[in-house]
Picture: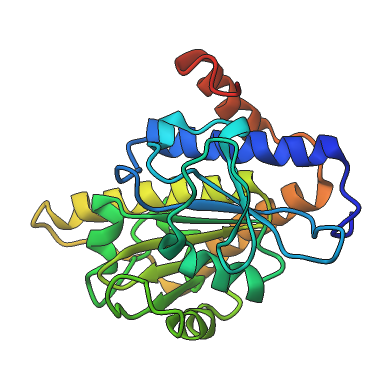
Length: 257
């Protein structure tokens, strides 16, 4: 459905899914206090204004609900703030750059996990050591660290380095994932996290790692890509995402408000 013509129900679903993303990232221990963000692009406003959802500043991820998400514009200015705490505008520097350049990105998810930061801090990045990591073969962009992302001029460099990729290792910093839906971004994030954990564990054994041949890794990446494409294109029920929502219902009742 084109921007600006989405129904209220769809917007409500987006708010629910984004709140679920925050809760799932927290549930998997991938949050970083009140820092890092997951943003979602709303349909354009009545005057064509760009609008995004972001977490209220100061809340931990496990405190985010569909009703307390903040609506902001592409500059980070607050449009609607039910909780009244505003947002960490500096934290939206990366997200605004990606959303404005990549209209296929409904959701942008940024993490600082120990495993993700570790893999982002080595020259080789993520190696195709197993099926999990093979899905990202040839699909990862890199952006060199420039300090805490407060400089708006860095946005153009982030976008240039990202290109058409949906996964980025922010060198010495963490990870960035783009999803055509919130569900896709979360699945990318969880799969990337366990890939990084597996790499740290394998290399920490002091034995010789078996790196998959390029052709096998590329074939596996293609298999994953086709599965993701099919799920997004069919626009229907997503059994994996449904299972994640049931996990939230079971382990964090009341998360949806």
